[in-house]
Length: 275
Image 1: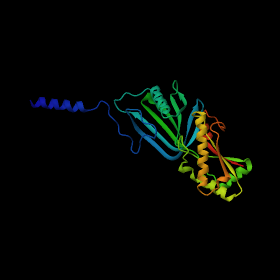
Image 2: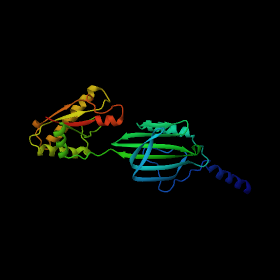
Image 3: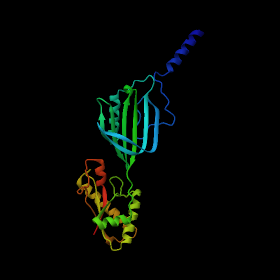
């Protein structure tokens, strides 16, 4: 009876041992933002820098250098788990990039398996590159988050541009689909106030512009509302409304290609025009 009990106990213990042994991630390493790991893989090593660069493939023989916050993460399949094929890893990340609203920039799913893409979100552009290795048993992910260039502009620069060309484009940002000016754009508003106060005879037209996403009528209405929101922000700080007019042009005056995210971002703008 005792022997039988011991055998049963041993069987129970054995049954509780998982067939896949989940490895412990390398110390200090974790998945980078926006991308979860492939299931049943663990992190063997990583590197993170506040500022570094990586050259992302954009064609079979050319790359695009991106600078910003940098991640490199190495993954390897858990012991006992079935590894993904390199093609499966590439296809998984293709789906992940597209699901996040990003764009696949380059993919090789036949010979030298790899994929690179980019995602624009929240004022930043994130680039990712995934390289399967060891017949799919491992893969390496590179990611660089490139923040949008902050617009360092003063009232003097505004005046110089108005005198030289008669207008200046300003990267004033709003809540999506609304005419609410974001806090991050208030320094530009302050410089516009200084411009108007320093140049007492200056009169301007504030123009709103959008990209071509959505219906033209809605874009026209939104651009009108945004131009008037800027006018009101200046008036609230003491600038006479008689010195300003506001009008929206919707998507009728693009300055860049609306077929790219970069172009659409440039088209979403406020222009100050000297009258």
